[in-house]
Image 1 (spheres, rainbow, N blue to C red):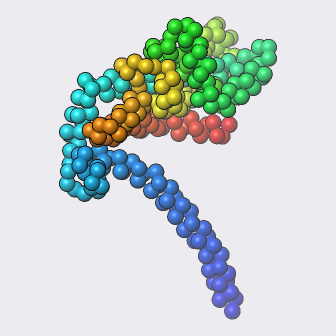
Image 2: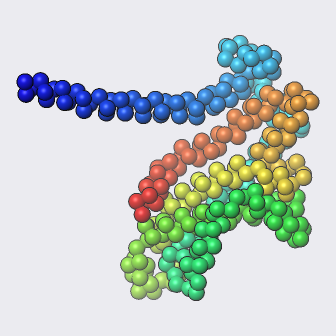
Length: 292
């Protein structure tokens, strides 16, 4: 009787666990499908010609035209897509690199130095995190108009260099990665503040720098509203704004549909490549921030 009762209790105990595990697996499976199905459709649609797109034959094995779509993409409107792609790489890669350096330096200063009203200023930084970027577009446009920077490279590039959330992450990573004892030892050895930062602290902040860089890269690459407000010259457009203009033209000129889909597929590749190459640093950086 005792063995039978124990077996019954064990079965009753395992049943909720198995049920809970099954529910979790179902939720994860639905989430994966929700994430991957649009990407799968984009890959398949980019390999089809216009007749297959309008005929709902995306899943068929016929009408393969990926190479032709690529040729049409880079030939459309005199090769504007290549120019847009280069602009996005310049905005995103250079902007994210400089922006990450600025954010980490500011976060390090907030963490390691004492100055008047430090916490109040940091409170303003946290408040700025909650302000949507679309709200800032009009004030930034007025400032750029007053300085004559509208419809220039700088009108889009300069605003993306400053990221309040990156400053917050910079302070968190500085607290977790840079011990005060190491800085004091460097100062005792005669190193100045700049030397201490660049030769000692910045090396320790490497994972945090990569994490902020990836966040900045994603935000700048997907930036749409600010370029739309600032730019009127198509030669300065990033990929996001350029594809939007082509998609708007597709209602009148259907030949734009295949190139828009193929261009959207190519536009995803730099982000995937960046996360794949920097994944190890990104994971370690997120873990350190979470533990802290």
